[in-house]
Image (cartoon, rainbow, N blue to C red):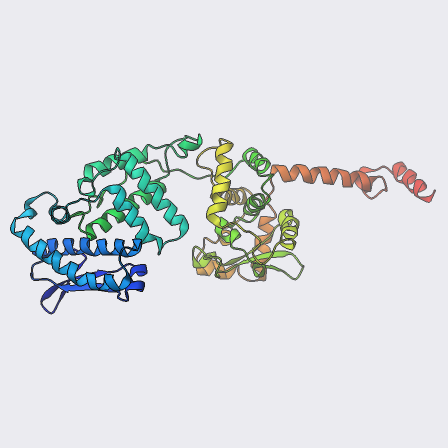
Length: 448
């Protein structure tokens, strides 16, 4: 067990107290020398002592015990647990299927339910995890209890039960409660849930409620589909931009991704210092790691030119924002974007990262060299990065990105060009499309 440590030929029980309890009690851990030198024989002692310490921790948190009383109670509780473990060990409970859990239940007169254990697990994790992670812990706890058919005893959880839970989750439709039920949940979501269940059960083993972790070495289903990503078509992009009309921040993030190939985290982590200009006053994005953004790899640190089609829109956005132009972090922006895709009933393989795939596909179609595409996207080794790092390399990147054209932008550009052509042609500025007589009549009208 984790609470057992060997020192100078003796076995000791040692339990590190939670940070909040350690702060008020003035001690970081509880330590006690055990009367046995065999780890198997020491298991029931450690199980009962951990249960006794857990009870005192709960009393401190609920205010039943003051910190001064709790510090004195640790010693007496460990002595009582030692005597109880010695009595129960003589009655040979280790022959039961769950020996440690049986010792705890026999000494305390109760067994731990899954719901109560998960709540204690949440309380202990609350001080060390982010708020979003705590929400995920609560969600997985509710799903686990529901998949097991309701609340049950922790010591009754077995490997076959967890395999059934895994298979049920693998067949679960994503966001079924929101009316969206297409395919099954992503493999990453299933992995995250099963890892959290494994962490919880390992935590139960450390407290003596289980003798072993039944979630160990449970493999994921082999039939989980591997989704092959692709880029958006012009029609799909047109529908996405129309749906994002009332969300200007996500709209601009999407536009930037379609014209630069940047990752979502690289864009949401932009700071005003990351946006600079070249000698011709054209915008550049200098992607470097800082406090608000960590890059995926060393090759992700690069300079990306902003194409003309998106430069004015980005410049107008920066003028109306502070040091951090985009307020939402990458996970929140990704969820909002995916929500739009599901509402449009687009294929499941399309995500925000598909915009990056689309840039690569369109550049390859335009005949851009693979090394240059890799340098733009940050997929390269140091040698290629150095080759395209100088001013000449940045100009090559800009020339390649200027080749990106999308249907919705072509239509608006054509309308602007047609209007400008008509305005210029009335004054003879478009000579290729005017006759000499037309030019003369236009000149006469100017003289008049």
